[in-house]
Image 1 (cartoon, rainbow, N blue to C red):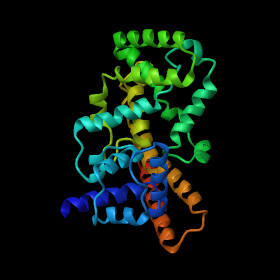
Image 2: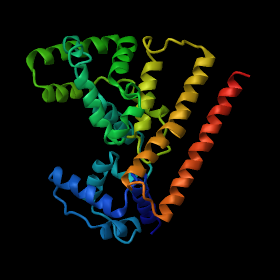
Image 3: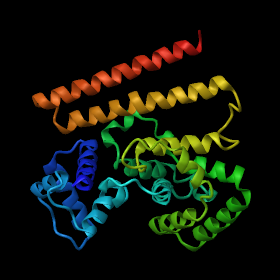
Image 4: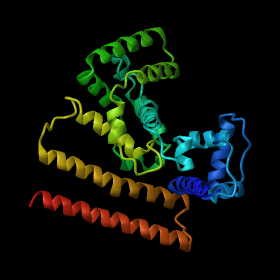
Length: 300
């Protein structure tokens, strides 16, 4: 019974983290099942409720589908502690999913910049309401340019092989989608830094496949390459970098999520939702005060 309770609490937490009711979650999960032509039945919100309360347990095929839908691994939803290999796989998937084509191959990168931005925006729809993009600097999620700098600086032989392969792919094929698939597959085999990166990423959430960790990956790659690490060993720059990260995690991103949540409920919350919103607002205000206090401490 205790094992089922652990499983149910994590599934519920995933749903609540998305800001979805049981009905909305069931509807979106059914859309995922149908879009991917999975050999499992659509679910009702009543079934989801029984899963969350540990009354019944999904079959393994459903756990697998839930993991795909939530961009995590089945053991994570079930409440088991994932192995390092599973964590590493999530980090790899995040990098590969958000890797954008053409930046490694110079002849197209300069002419298709608008498409690169559109591609990144479309992928970020997994995490962020697209109407909120005006409030976000999308470059903090661009994993491709920092990956190029990082590999070129720290793994020059790997980078040379990768560059050669990409040039061959580009010459042999002009189809955007197929080039992307080929390049993503090639990238997957040139990520020698994954172990150290996986150890560094925040593991407070239920999945390493999060927008917060995407930003941390970009920051890690920038900080670890000559092109992105202009501050060197400047201790003040390092502290400011940590403060920026604190602000993003605890102020900027929670505020974006709260705005998206308000839009989903048409700015007409129930009493329960109002209490939830007020609690979130309080957390954001407290975090912002901490951020300001830490800045003041730096310059005293």
